[in-house]
View 1 (cartoon, rainbow, N blue to C red):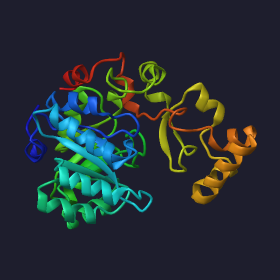
View 2 (view 1 turned 135 degrees about the vertical axis):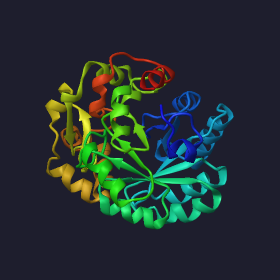
View 3 (view 1 turned 180 degrees about the horizontal axis):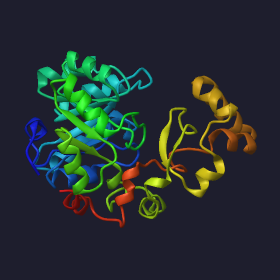
View 4 (view 1 turned 30 degrees about the horizontal axis):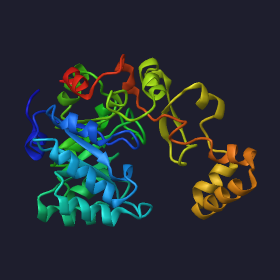
Length: 314
């Protein structure tokens, strides 16, 4: 695989990042990915406490000899842990941070002096230009084939567009699960790729076997958008459970997604009164019952180790 600016920025052999996946990515996956010559990123929110996040970073450092250790930070006001998470990342000297869902200004200001690279998720040109002006080292172009919260533009649209209007590297995110797919994206002008869904069904993931087997059994035509988990459209596997519960919020879910205080009280009420019908209506769709994935599971035909998945990709 040809060398790009991403190899230089991250000090990795291949310009690929194992994308951060909420409740999926773990330290073992990070270690195996980094030791296979690619970068890897884990959501800070996969850890409930700051000490757990510190322990994870230190464990990864102890068991890897290469660079490319990344942390994903949600940078909007909903993440009340962000300030401490950023402080921990700076103190322990991670290699890079991927910012999502908000302004990366504070992250860039604190990371730049420490040599920590900052890559920012963007879905369109105006946000890419904004983060470049703030000092981002690269943009992650989230296209419409991405898993989780996808963009609106195809890779063929967004990569040339961002390259035209930005001078920092463009990393493509979404829809790739093969070496041929990587080559195609690189030929569009991407300096690297962020790849997530092909790693869900790996041996090292601490998720249910049912989730892994669903990634093997289902394909790109089985990916649908749902708003039932958080209110924001998110790509999931269209399992019989999803078909039964639907993909749009009911009136109660809409109400709670707009008002977190109501959600808190509703949980208390259903807990104490045993209102099962209400509980089922309001809390049935969670990340444990609805499985996030992107169209690139089309290329997942068996459960493999992270090392084997990287080998297939390169």
